[in-house]
Amino acid sequence: MMVFDYRYVTGAGKYKRAHWQTVLLFSWKQIKLPEFKLRPRGFIDTLVGLVIPRGINFKDYPAFFRNYCLVGWSEAAVLRVFYDIVAEFCKIGQGWC
Image (cartoon, rainbow, N blue to C red; front, side, top):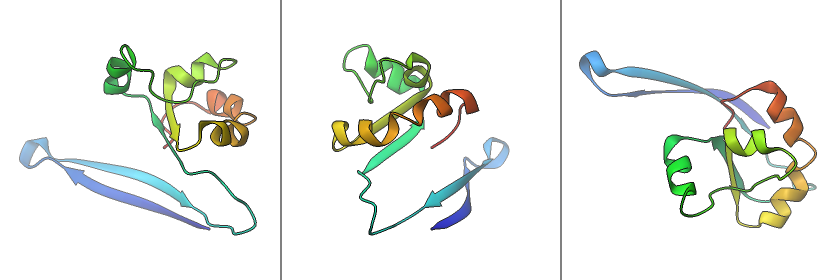
């Protein structure tokens, strides 16, 4: 398991802005996790979602779907892994990737 902070800069001059992100990376051969991506739901996700549903929707946790975009190659496998912890994501606030 690795935990590290990632910093990057966008823009230039007076529009220059620094961004920080803490990253957790783990690999464990005994545990088979499905490939997934989790990020805060943005404007584009909301806009595209008007036409095409974007992200895995947990019907019991509408706040999660409003705040996060969770995608994966196997929706069923991601649902199995995340279903029990989604309620916790709803409690801890926004911004997790």
